Image (tube, rainbow over all chains, first blue to last red):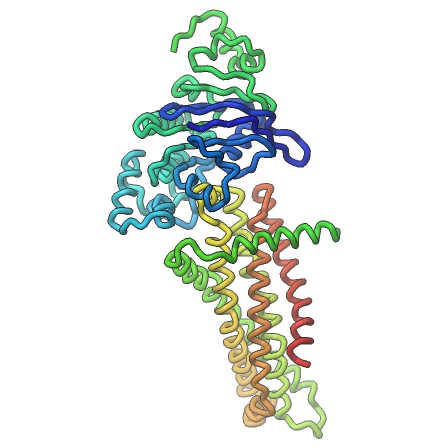
Length: 254
Length: 248
C-alpha cells in the first residue's frame, strides 16, 4: 500500500500541489485523473521521489520514503517499476538491453537467467521477437509495451504509469490498459496511473482520484464517477456535447 | 550575472559530487569506458590528424617565408615549428577543436536523454545516472586525449616535413636538425598536463549543460552552444594559469 499524507509542492513560488492526502491499495489500478497542468505528473514524480515534497510524507508499506537516505531509498526504488509518458527507453540500447538494464545493475543473475527473464517479460507484453530492435525502430504502442516489460523486469511491488495511452490509437490504448490491469492483478502490484483518457477510467479504474488545480477534489470508483455532484469533475468528464447528452439520457452501467 | 555564475558553479560542484562516486558495478563501468573511448577519442582521430598535418605544413611555410635573414640558420624553421606545435597548437588549439566536436556531442546526447526522461528512468531504478553517464566520459577523455595530443604533435611535424620535402622551401636536413635542436622533454609533460586538464573541462562542462538541459529540443541546442562557449573560455583561462605555473 502507498499512502500520501499532506503533500504540498511549489515551483518558483507557484503552488502545484496543495495538501494531498490519499492511499493506493495493492492489486488495484488507482487512477489519478485531471486536466493538463492540474498537477498529476508532479504528484506522481513526488511519490516516486523524482521531486521531493515541500511538506508531507509518502509512505510505502509503513516506510516513510521521502525521509530515507538516498542509499535507503535505492532499495525501495528497486521494487518500483515506472512507465513514462514517452516510454523513456534508452536510445543507445536494444529492446533486450533496455530490459536487462535494471538486472545488470541490481542482480547477480547469470547471463542465462537474465536472458530467460527478458524472454519472459517480452512474452508477457506480446513482443516475443523484438529483442534486437532499437527503440527508434518500434511503433509508439510497441515502445509502451517494452516500457512495461522493463518496468516489470525486477518483479516490482509498485508500478507507476504516467499517461500510458498518450499518442496511441484507441485500440492500442485499450490493449495497453488491459495489459497493465492484468499485470496488476496477476502480481498483486500497487499500480498508480496518471491519465486523462476516459476510456482508461472506464476500463481499469478501480480507484479514481480527481485532481484539480493541485488539490484532490473527488475520489471514488468508476461506477460512482457518473453520479458525482463535483462540478469540476463533471466538467472534466462530460466535456463534449455527446457526453453531456449521454449523462442526461442514459443510465450508464459499468 | 555574477549571482548566476555562482549558482552555476554551485550546481556544477553538486553534480560533480554525484559523478565522482564509486561505480555501482565495475564491469558496467569498464564496458561504458570502452564505448566512450571509442566514441569520444578514437572517432576524433581523423579530424585531429587532418588538421594537424595541414597546420604543421602551414606553420613551416609561414616560418620559412618570414625567416629571410641570412644570419638566421634555416634549421630554426624546424625548431620554431616544433615549439609552436608542442607548446600551443597540439594542446590548446586541438582542445578548442575538441570542445566543439566532443563537447557538443556530449551536451546534446545527455540533453536529449534529459528531456526524453531517460535520465529520470535511470534515477527511478535507483541508478546514479550522473555517475553512470558522465564518469566514463571524463575518465576516457582525460586519460586518452593526451595520446591524441602526441599524435597531433607527430603528424604536425610530419606535415612540416612533407612541405619541406615536396617544395624544397628549406633543406630537409636543416629541418630535421631544427626538430632535434635544444629539445626540452618538459614541454611534452607540460602539454600532456594541459591536454588532460582541458579534456576534463570539456567533458564535465558539456555533461553539466546536457544534464541540466530544459525546454525541449531548443533547450538541447542551447545547452550544446553554452557548453562550447563556456569550455572554450575556461580553456583559455586555464591555459594562462597552467602556463604561468608550469613554464616559469
